[in-house]
Length: 321
Image (cartoon, rainbow, N blue to C red; front, side, top):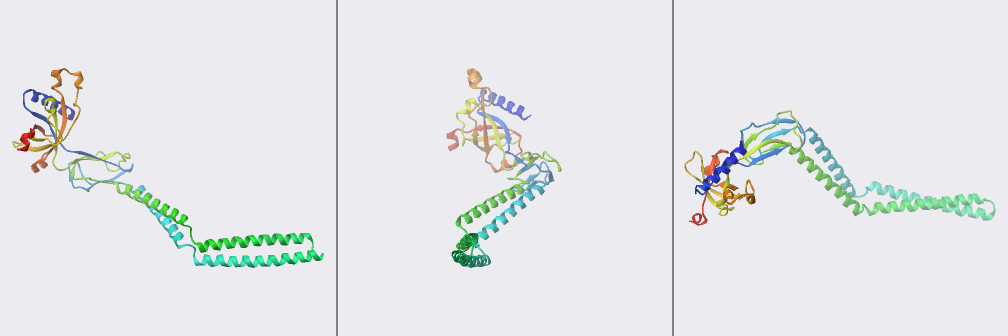
């Protein structure tokens, strides 16, 4: 139906040009807005009906949120874990941990002193001939182990006193930022399960019923933008050179006597059908170019879409007067 109307407009535009009238014909249209599902979830609620006028931000369709809510809550838990880890690194070791490290170091020093005394005693007994070589070896191994334990305890205490390394804090901070970003993304996905009108307009179609599960990216609501419609007309080839974005025009709507002021929003660079190089000079006069005109009169806002229109383009000199 729409295709037939467009072809009829093309032919009428060509005929009008041949009769000497500098007009382009077409129809009133509004921007069509398709709203898609964020995820493949069942439709839980439909709050509007086809034909309803809605304001910007109005809730149209709600999808079941349980799965996305669980994902958001999991992301928020990971944020809490990362924040706690960063706070732990920033505070550094607890006083109890430092005290424990000091005690371990003191015990290791005492053990080393004991091992040193026993090693000297074993050496003296060996020299006196009352101790075996095996006993001396045992005492020296014990001394080596005690020295290593003392050094390890000292290193652990030094690490405690120095606090958390800057690299660890930076890494924990980055992990927290990543967790927060994931939580924001999960919250955004959950919020988008509520399909809202991006601008004022009229609900044109609701393809699904409650309980149906549209695919992710599937269109769940179609709107026609509010405000004044625009005129989509077919400019004959003879007029194309004088029509450009910003060109003023008068648009006549069937059934309304007074014309509406309009301004060209856009005009196509290519003909809407057969390529010019395949046509004779006579046939090239039938080429048409699609143009969109914004109706600037306030009264145009109440016009319905689909009405046939004729657009008369104003010469630059006339528009300046």
